[in-house]
Image 1 (cartoon, rainbow, N blue to C red):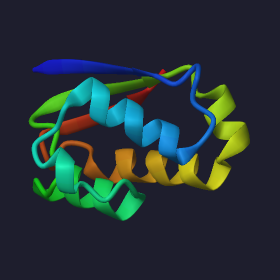
Image 2: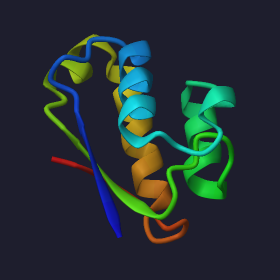
Image 3: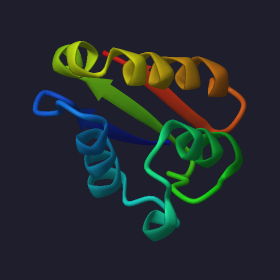
Length: 94
């Protein structure tokens, strides 16, 4: 299984996170991916635009992201818990 590392050490906004996601993973349908939590849910749970393929996504160095966008970060964690083992995508936070 392929593993991607999303190093969030320089991320301070939701937009920064989506740029990092798209540049690092280069998912299917990136050009029409919605760049929001609903679109991410659709991508990782059902193969919608932004689908990373079967993989593990490691998200690290999230301190700044947690401080700047706590609600967004909590949403990412919720999605990670909900898709576990169901979709072929594993999202872990280091």
